[in-house]
Amino acid sequence: MAPSESTKSGELKYFERLDIPVLSIDKIKDEIKNNIFNTLNAWDKKVELEKQTFHIIGPAGVGKTAVCSQIANELSNDETIKKLTNGKKFSCIIIKSPVLSRDDLLIPFPVIDNGHTRFQMLYSDFVPMDMNSFGLFVIDEFGRGDHNLQMLLWQVQNEYKIHLKDFPKGWFVLCLDNPDDQEYSMDTLADAAGLRRSLHIYTDVSVSAFLNHAITMKFHPLVIEYIQIHPDHLYDFDSQKVGRVYANPASWERVSNILWGFELGSGIEGSIRSIDSLVSGLLNVSMTRLFVEFMRDKKDISPKDIFFKYSKVKKSIDEYIEAGENAKLGKIMTSFITYLTTSRPSWKKEELINIATFFSDVPSDISALFITSIDKFGRTSDEFKYATKLHVSLIDNCEDYKVKFYQQMVDIGKRAKESK
Image (cartoon, rainbow, N blue to C red):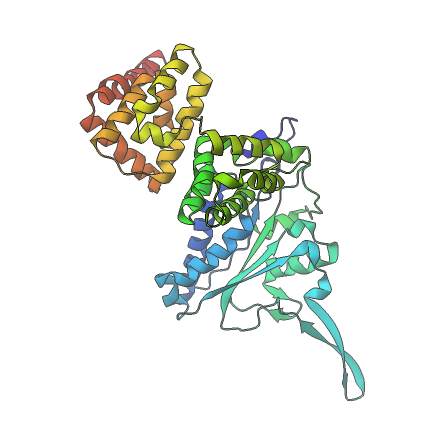
């Protein structure tokens, strides 16, 4: 669900009010890493490029905090970055604004000097002190910190220093916030000076980003398959808005951990009741009921079956077509495209025939989602490269796909142009 769809009140969402870009969390990670590389590279070439402070705004649980640690780890292991830092790793300090005060970072301490009392500032362990080090200083939930702490952290974001203490040159500041919407309790300093201090980006909920991360980090297969089939269940905005426990990327990761615990212990099949009780506290009872039904019955048409065993599900697809269940077919097509572009399974002739038959069976406006979805991916992305290669292989190897699907898409495009 796109962020603008999470409210039906007609009020502008936070990113709309600020008029800032909306990017998936993985895209934000790439942009920040690239920016840090560009800055370090410029310094290496004796060009004193000013550092950027990034302000990442997005719904709770979408992965903002986790991605900061990932950035630090990936920069530390990047061979090109290592050359620019003389092999030094990137540290990551994350401070939680809601549980801190100004005195947790900076404390005036009285010192007697020649009979006179003066105050010397003591800096906490949160403040990076090694001037030859590199790292990320992450201010989490800045908008929920108290006013005095916020004023101190404005200096960190704007000047890369606390009081008179400069941060090491190799440290970069990231600020994280929830949107200033009705679902969150915020104390935002919204003024022109505050807006100019940072580069603001809103992070959208991205099913593709979540699944790519889940597959890479080996989340439990049941979680991956469920979100591939039900991508709209990744983030439960409706439950969040009314104050219920709600599904989100962070809670699904915890569900995965619970499943792996049972998988490696007493087993999942005999532990459904315990899993139901535990997962309900992460997703809410209603969402958990749907997930547990999926685990037990597997009644949903699996995109893996369409890819590998289309004959197994073809009867159900034909029944939906005959009944005119286009909404259901659209969801199945969306889940299939999600599976293709995140799992990116290998294919042989049999799998190509399965895909071609499926695309030829469903109405053309449903199968057209495959082409329109490909077009939404960046041209250099793994998703685009995979889908394009699959598309070309289908044209070269499956006459049904070429004639009944691809040529239809071409003809529809020509008629659309002629009608204009």
